[in-house]
Length: 341
Image (tube, rainbow, N blue to C red):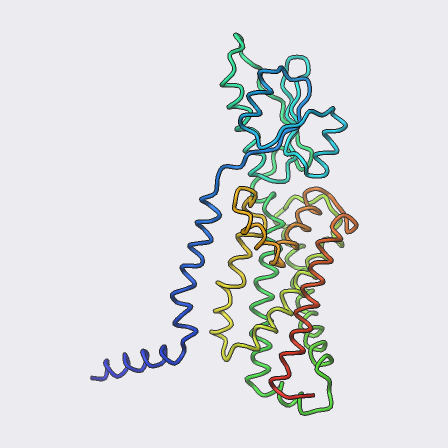
């Protein structure tokens, strides 16, 4: 009987907390669907620039590539710089030369696979020499960790700031501190600004530690400016913080804060650049444009692997700032439900 009483209490508790009950069902299905969408896509077909290749070889490449374009070496360098092509293939002194863009592991693998398929389908009567592989960005010995490292930095900064910021702001509410502040003449925007700046100091420290550890302890590949990289990381952390404080207004306990992870954090992992999205449906690619981590990870990759500066990633930073500003304004609006000021 005592066991039955405990069982009934648990059942009643879940019946009252319909959000937790629904999330137990929806969250696993959502994550499985995201994994299916990302991993079940078609193989990536690279975009190739070429020069001084025999026509049969060009025709064969055209069968496997998404797009091919004839370009001289200088033109190909510009195309690689702008991200218009994934590789430049030419022949010098009977030796194939493959210049990979280098920043995207999926694209690099697709180019090498395309080249091998093209070589195997052509009967030249004599063996083709092994190609010389060069990299426009990065180095030949860069591992998967180096190439995905910028995305991982962005993710962990976003994830932990979201969790810590959300729980901290929730405690301000549940312990009555927020209500006491709202009873003073303080304005809503002043209150939100104070919380963001106060918590923001610790997010800056966290961002600094993560970036320093990744680059100087784990020896993650980085050719950009350290301080500019730190600035991007801090902006991403502030965006996560303003989002966390906003969503914590709709949670009644710490467990409900954790419930936002499958809905808010997990989708951003899949759409932040770890996986190539070009092979997926257009609506999925559009969906990724509404996720802050997409822009943060793209900026971090451009700076760490390509050596670009703030002036090259200004658009991504502008979007991140826009997200943070929108979340900040929504925080002010949400405070109205506590007390009109």
